[in-house]
Amino acid sequence: MQYESVIGLEVHVQLNTATKIFCGCATKFGAEPNSQTCPVCLGLPGVLPVLNEEALKKGILAGIALNCEVAEYSKFDRKNYFYPDLPKAYQISQYDMPVCKKGYIDITTENGMKRIGITRLHLEEDAGKSIHSEDKSENTSFVDLNRTGIPLAEIVSEPDMRTADEAYNYLQKIKSIIKYTGVSDVNMEEGSLRCDVNISVRLKGEEKFGEKVEVKNLNSFKAVKAAINYEFDRQVDLIEAGEKKLIIQETRLWDPDRQLTFSMRSKEDAHDYRYFPDPDLTPVIITSEFVDELKKSLPELPDQKRERFTAQYSIPVYDAEVLTSVRQLSEYYEDVIKNGANPKKASNWIMSELMGQIQDPEDIMNFPVKAADLASLLKLIDNNTINGKIAKTVFRDMIETGKKPEAIIEEKGLIQVSDTSEIEAIIDKILSSNQQSVDDYRNGKEKALGFLVGQVMKESRGKANPQVVNEILINKLKG
Image 1 (cartoon, one colour):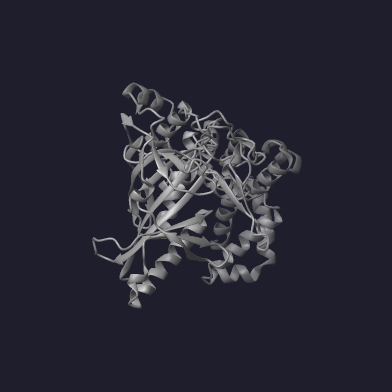
Image 2: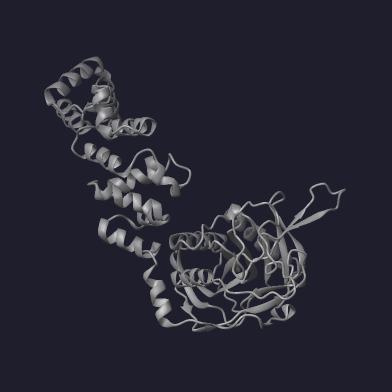
């Protein structure tokens, strides 16, 4: 294709402080409308904001985790615009001196790892929420100001992404890193992770960017991908139709029902917001000692953990990426290994059998099969007490009953048969009753062996050691 998209993302992360960024109101989700407000967040005359130190710390922690430089000197600004859910008619944000800048993260693409730059991470207060009546005849809107003053960290990327998949992977990585730090639950359903897309189109090889369009109302990562793909096609179609002038700098909304974007308003530039330093808030001075203390509180992050897993446990990079994508999943995996399981076998089982049984990997610590019991099951496979097929049956029983694998195996008589004389007797019986398959194998039809193995396993109720079965069968068929 001769065109490419140029994509940048603005990600808003709600910091999980107990109180708002400039007042003492609670930040609890789902409270009665307008029940978590005060004169400060309502913007009443004569009040003064006071910066929440916990919000500052959590914002800086997020910046450090995103490889940002922490500014020694930053300040808050007033971003002026009028909207019903913005009671002061300005938003306290940061403009030219953000708390963090010049960061990056590495994402996986079809061509390998790619570094995406992060322009800045700045702190700001959230606006309220407008609620419009679903009955068009009422023509009524309501305003809930509970969200007003909720602390946000806005993460602005460089326009380094070229495809919807890259944008999707970037968002997944941001979410994973922020979740690891513990500064936010990054729950899109509750609004603690929101994303706006900036996208333009140009000919491949061109240096100059096309006209940038912002897309809002994206309530899922899937919607981000769909909106980017739609907007790319829309802009390319206009260019090829000779209507490039119709691509203007504007804000468009994503319609999830019709799967398209539509114009909301012309896009404001920075000067439209008339930024100026907030006179009620002093500049923020951050010392290197303060930053060093915060760094000590950071956990091992996904990239570090992935590299350690591949080196320490000799598992493939893909396995390590899956297992480290969620902190709880990585902890469960390491608990299984600490209880004596083979690292690769543990990886395989967790990614296939276990993850097929849970909807959210973050809930893995509540999974009925504890790490120590899964390790016991895997060791029973390794020492030939049971085979892999029986292990899957035992695993399902462990989930349903909460019992340990040894108890289930004993109760159901599932111990693997490795006694060669017992297996040989079963094989002799199968060979004598399946002469056609014996002849087929001896005539070069390799598939016949699989059929015979299956018959032996069926006769032994799955308990025969498959390796022993194969060895004896082949010897007898060649004899």
